[in-house]
Length: 171
Image 1 (cartoon, rainbow, N blue to C red):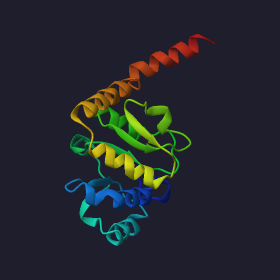
Image 2 (cartoon, rainbow, N blue to C red):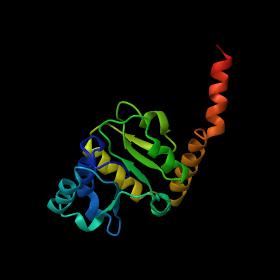
Image 3 (cartoon, rainbow, N blue to C red):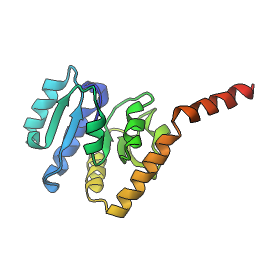
């Protein structure tokens, strides 16, 4: 997960969901990249739920490449979102996504083949889908990963410019 450690990003919801499944997936870790006003509260929450050993708070980072390359999938637990650029970044690394279906952002970017949209704020369903991602077969994972990469290409600059030119010429 990547973003500001603030209420709107829903890391409290992610930690709660993770606490429901962490013992079922030993060796798995949640890595949260970012900083913000909720950092101390979130770290305390991880301790309170006894999952602090399986959650890494990586702080704010300038080089995200290493985190995306090490990840198995990406989770966005935002309560609200604009156009989630982080989702396109994650997809460009072939990461399947699990995200809350908040008002804008995820549904516009994630297709059913590249990720899973979870009913907004449904922590139990988020936990179930995170668990499902950890248990995905190699074939399922390869298919979702390939779809994620393919989907991210639709946001490449050449494709966006072509789209804008078409819109402008149609007026």
